[in-house]
Each structure stands twice: as structure tokens, then as C-alpha cells.
Length: 197
Image (cartoon, one colour):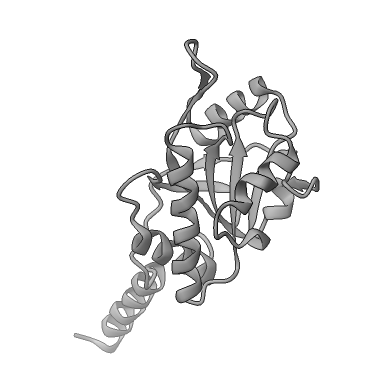
């Protein structure tokens, strides 16, 4: 092989290696989150812009939930412990209430106080109408939110959504049962350290 051909091969291998991330992370979804400004459990405004540049996990809950929300919230506290063990600090968890008429900031604050949660990294959001969060969930997370016609409960998705630094949902995980803590932690570390794929 001539020197020119060898140089070309080395150059191409370099390009291929540069294009390959060292991580195994692959985005599975590409849902761009619509701009929002909502109110957290401390009665402070939180916007999508505030989360820009941060990797975050989102979910949908409500405080009067009788089934899936308590285990989902507990599972997120467990995820926080895993992240802490792995030295992951630069992240947020964002829980959107799907019962905003009831879930005022103080009620959300009381709710999360029942769990061993690091609330400095956890925004529980409200301050909108039901129809707004219904549309927001459907548009930004491809996720259903609907009132149960036979009770005071709200039907909603039980997934955890991984959001990259640009505000795009790139992956979803089970949030209710069989939560893949190791996978979520590894994916978050990758996005935090390398940016978005």
C-alpha cells in the first residue's frame, strides 16, 4: 500500500473513531419539549430555560394518587441515592402534577416531605389548568393524561423520561416497577459528561 493510500486509510479510521462515542448510549426518542413556566413546591417559577444545560428526569404524578404515584416517587428517591453513590450531582428531577386544581405548591411540598428526597434537585410543578398539562404531556412527552370518569383519579403515564441538555426527551424507562436504575444512572452520566448524542 502506498504512503498516500495508507494516510487516507488512517485519516478515515480517525474520522470513524471520532464519530463514535465511547458510551453505549443511544437516543430512542426525539420529543422536543414545549416552552413552559410553571410553579414549584417552593412557590417559585421554574421554566424550560431554567433547565437548559441540565440533564433531567421527568414524570407525571398527583398527590391524591391511590395507585402508581407513591411507588414512582419512592423509585425516584432510590434513583437519587444511586446517582449520589455514583457521584452524579448536576441533574434535576421534574415531577409535573396532573391534578393542578388540588396540588398547590404547599401540598406538593408536604407530599415530597414524606419521602427521603433531595429536594434541592427536585422540582414538583403546578400552576396551570388541567387542559394545559394534558396538552403539554401529549405534545412534549407523547403521553396520555385523562380524568377517570368513575373516580377522582387521573390516568397518566408511569414512565420516567430522560431529557437532555437541549430540552429533548431522548429515552423513557419504566417508573413504576422493574426500574432500570443502573441503566438510567449510566445514561445520565453519559449525557452529563458528554452532552447529547
